[in-house]
Amino acid sequence: MEQELIRLGFSLAESKIYIELLKNKFMLAGEVSKKTMINRRPVYDTLSRLEEKGLVGYNLSANKKQYYAIEPDVILRNIDNMKESATQILPELKKLSA
Image (cartoon, rainbow, N blue to C red):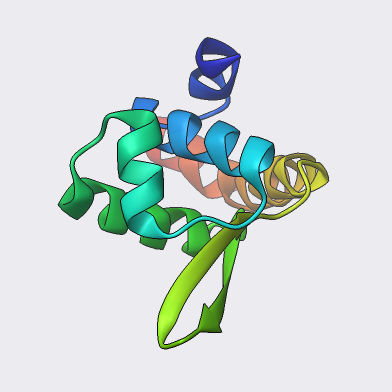
């Protein structure tokens, strides 16, 4: 499944972390790090990128972030948004190559 997510534009770390969060509901960054075998600092960076993409959220509990995966349907919405953006800039890109 990781490879399929990579083909959709995920990095290897993003795919591992997203899959792990889908399996485990709520996890602290340290738990994510242990389960995925990715060092803690890159885990925080990757969780932040996944948040920006709308794929991960978090709840605060005892001043700690408990991360969770957003439903996978958001992947299709993100792809639809990218397609719409590409469609809008395509005419300008074509002019550049003419």
